[in-house]
Length: 295
Image (tube, rainbow, N blue to C red; front, side, top):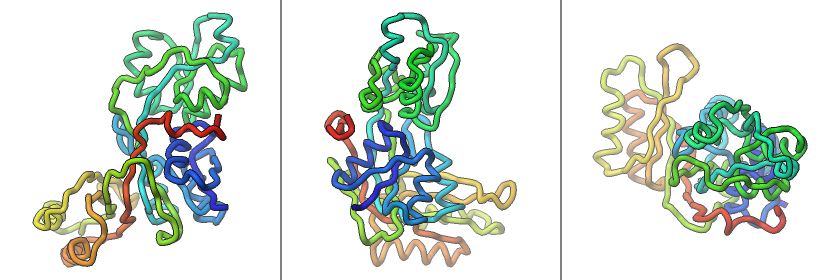
């Protein structure tokens, strides 16, 4: 059966995205984002789904850098999941009613709940984990520690934890977008509850001695009326001040417009790589995608 690698353990937002994109496939958790990507590169899994961008905290640089510099895999789709963060504890802590001394979660989750934590637990210690579900698992494995965690309702249910308070996040419109990666972009197709549209992601390296190159790069898209939904720079890791640009175009790869952009940019001396052209989907409500197999 087709295997989908996702950032684990069970109960992460990544698992929610994986199950929404591929409900009929087998899903296998891995401890880190690079391990998910390696699983596809090494043939342990056919697909990987990894976080790429959060509406509050921005891009997930670990995903970008590993995908660009270590294991280049085609992007075959994306899935966006709403992020609702809850505060959970073990049932033993619920009975003792003692104040916690530490909060455990992924750095992004703790940052997304900053205002709440400052107001409710101003002196609490933070400890970071690779995922929100890993925090839930740790609390389940160490129920008598005075530690609380932040994560989703799926993780709390998976590890038998008590939700102390719901929706402690600072912003209601938080979303995380995930890339779907595969060795062969023509074999698998992503689906989802709600289609957002088509995208093409390009990596562009500017010529070092070309004045005004970035302006001309953007012009190549503008006069063709191609909308750019995201543009950001990342270091090439070849020297201080050397960067490449990642650009998301709200348009599927065709035979005319995007090839025309590529040809024009290459004429200017730019390096251009198409990382993927794919459909984007969204999960509208997490509860609708909580599988009985998970719970």
